[in-house]
Image (tube, rainbow, N blue to C red; front, side, top):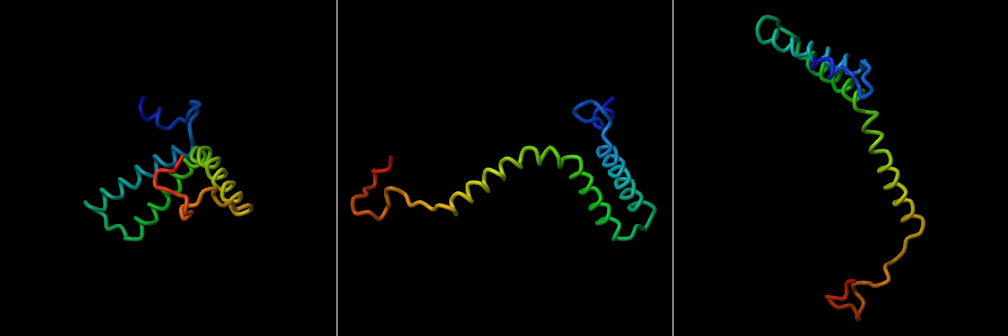
Length: 105
């Protein structure tokens, strides 16, 4: 069943975050349809539901994104710290009188 596959995580166990997100998206879609046909939903409901959905989406994907991005952010921060701690000028400067157009190695 496709819905069951969507609501389970990589290990095959049901995911609370995905279940809540799915329920919230179904509820938001129902509210949108009912608002256009029958009900008069206050305008503030849409930003609130959107904020809830974004929060649930970050709950679903946050740990995976952090697992991939955290090492990259750490490496960039280490490079910046190293550059600040011991700045080093290049061995060959562009404004050297001996520098020619094809001297790059």
